[in-house]
Length: 229
Image (cartoon, rainbow, N blue to C red; front, side, top):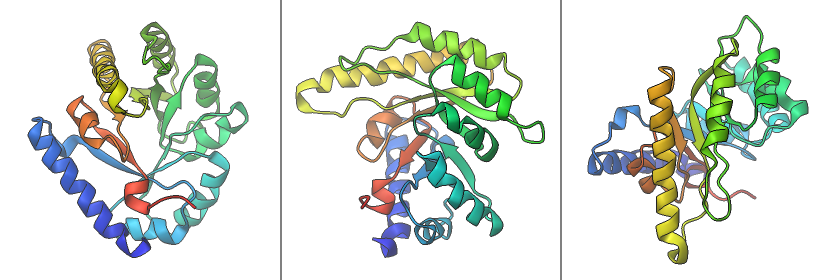
């Protein structure tokens, strides 16, 4: 699989291009994140050599080791944190990542803001949508958190992130409606805040439906690096 990383990235970019053309989306604005959790430095460097510079990590403690090693090599990597945020890891996230995709409450947002040093640019921040088992979404909570993030000087509100329930034939119609709801919330936030420009939606198994519903940031792990051990 390691030798196929370059081929996989090219294949995904072709999929993105064709899907964007099909649904009349701007392919140049769709950003590919390589989800590198549990992947080695060697595997990440193979992706870098294929002109992949956006990397996403789920676990702060694991990520910081990679970040320190790769930063010394002067790669122009943009690090995204996409995992669940533990309160005691907010300092690591705030001081070592350019993006945080998984802000789900005001308490975490305030902690990230307080730990983000003045020497760094504001942390690009996405609100993670909580999708319930029945595919319902509490959009009021999202709008409340967005107001708080906008008031914090060391955070920059860029949009929303979502992990929809897996598509299956029995609930396919409901799940497709969820993607539409997510896009609607995103567009409503864009109307309210000029800084909103990012919908982080779509992984290896739902690239096409995500792009169809306005995603411009895809989080791809398995289709780039293969299955985790």
